[in-house]
Picture 1 (cartoon, rainbow, N blue to C red):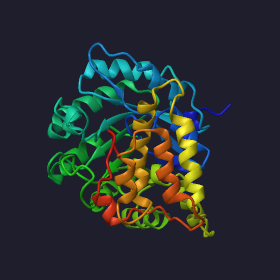
Picture 2 (cartoon, rainbow, N blue to C red):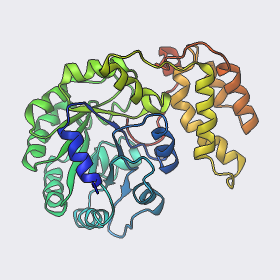
Picture 3 (cartoon, rainbow, N blue to C red):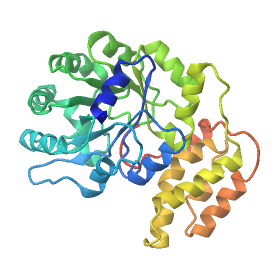
Picture 4 (spheres, rainbow, N blue to C red):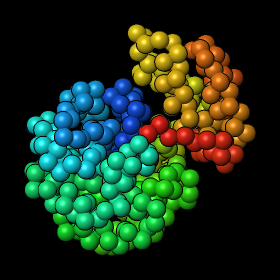
Length: 350
């Protein structure tokens, strides 16, 4: 029987660009992985991050994404933290489960994370990154991967961390080509991904603002990356991985119509909202996903404006039906005005 690590290795060695779903805390949980896989899905998935500190234990809800992996595809377990002994301990524990790789988060831009010197905050201290990677490279017997941004408040540090990544023989590096302080507000500096591809022997995935099959092809061409990691774009458009594959094969792209998107919203609600939860909690959870979807629905920002003010399930679906119950094609690419109204992130990455 082929293991997930063997499947992961085959993907990296194969002829096609590797497509990965980015981890987003509080969003890409087990139910969402199951749902996105049903729309064609990614080649590789990454868990939400396991918080690692001296007394931490593996979070059971996140671990279910590994032990109950519903995708049939390799899954990578991601850690976040800065305590070396705790990271080593956690990496060893994670390898007792069917993970394709263990990943270190060097990119989370949430202030609650980087102020503690974890996630993207580690990029302020390349020497500590060096020490962490050295310890983890020794501890990780399966594949060892890193997801990074290009710096904390300036991309100048990227020149310092690239040799560190090369030194520790990573098996894969994913680069979100913005700094931590840029969050998701600026253009993506894809030239830094090109630099990583040139500098490293390991495969590199390109990450950041990949919202269509054409944009994915453009990013692959300009960077030379081995593949793409997609977050917000795949939540907005669950057909995106399918469309990228169709584009690669030279086939006509499937473009959903309004009722297809409405069906997706209904399926999303059924997948991620527990009937046991309070109605207000279910509505609030759906708003997380609607923040991603909404910027691709219509150009004025009215859909998001109304969604953010609903308080009941009935009102949520009333607004969705008002904007989506039609047969017109919906490319689900972000409209600039709706994007300005707030393409909010619910934690991590994209």
